[in-house]
Image 1 (spheres, rainbow, N blue to C red):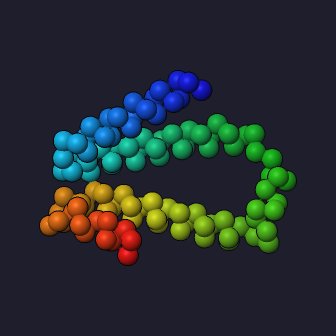
Image 2: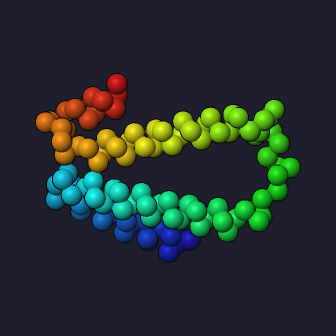
Length: 105
């Protein structure tokens, strides 16, 4: 547990250092972090799928799986939009003003 907190703290410090040196280097790092997250997610699902008890998920699925698929689509769309905004921030004229305004909008 302590090792996880130390690793998370180190990662946060690395991201803060990248942001400190300029927003132009951030898109490359964010793309790499995205692929690392994707690989870790696939590993997690692959390892834990054998331990899933579907009967525990009956109240989540309700009458079908369409609600879960819709929610997953919305989640990934929001995540993708946030990533895209961070990646394209170096092409915006005034990112310090434009990005917070667009987030609120």
